[in-house]
Length: 377
Image 1 (cartoon, rainbow, N blue to C red):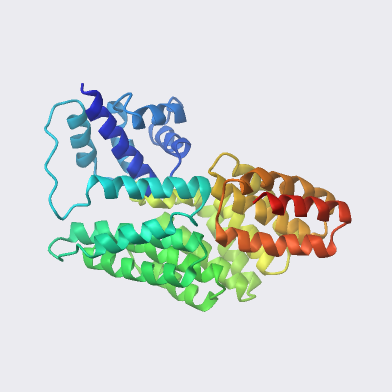
Image 2 (image 1 turned 180 degrees about the vertical axis):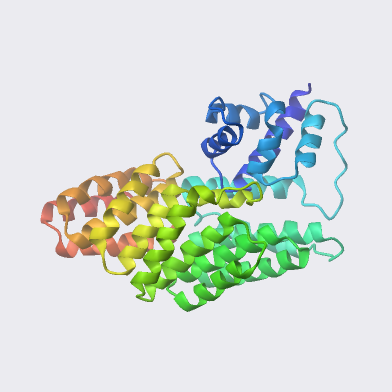
């Protein structure tokens, strides 16, 4: 078996995983869940991606987890084993550079945030958009996916207007391509931006659109309900917001089905806890929000520095609003090493607001610590 072919297959699996917004640990967990075993570990997934081994026995559940047709994954595996020649690329397919670049940009964002790579993503997006000939739906879907990545990174860099414009165009391309899962993903990201920028009415219109289709998988509906709950909370509708979140929590496990798109795996227990806490913060109830945010903060350890940044900061924000200064010290100190490497303007805007509140209201010893932490980044 050719070492180079195995390496190419591993890089292909890694690109699929990054596109699905999954960590190696999450992929391993999903494979174990699908097979009813506990033998697949993050290290094994890493071995596949480095080209150390082709996961022949795991191709079917891996295809489901990564959202790729099984026959395509089997064909790639056969090529890695030397059983088939590598196909020539057509001019309409993204070249190896584009595929590798998109995977790298997502990996960088997960570790370091989107600020420094958003412009690179936009450059790739604009170049590939300019290559559209309109001859194949596959090409439209491929370019739409690049637009989705660019839109996400622009959002993380707090360039919300650009992000929404990019995602709106990516949604149009996904619809023209007939790629419903990608349509749902892009709509969810647009709703996410609307929630973040407090455009509750627009977010609810989008989630209504997502929930209206008969063919919407359960986990996509779950995502839409979480976004809708956040919007209702921003609008001050406590009863409906908490009811939606309670239903989302209850449906978290029941919503797992074979037809769920790969990207929906981001909505796990940690995320539902985070959004429940954030909704309660929007409703002016930091006391009720805190247990949810503490659980999500603890669960975010090791799940990517950018994600951990947001979850820890949400916990700190609730403690500051409660005036729980002793308890606030631990998450504040936990942020210090994260700030050395993560540049997510979206999250840092919130951090500056929280640090100002500490400087204004907290005891001097905590205010001094906050100033030291602020100077880290």
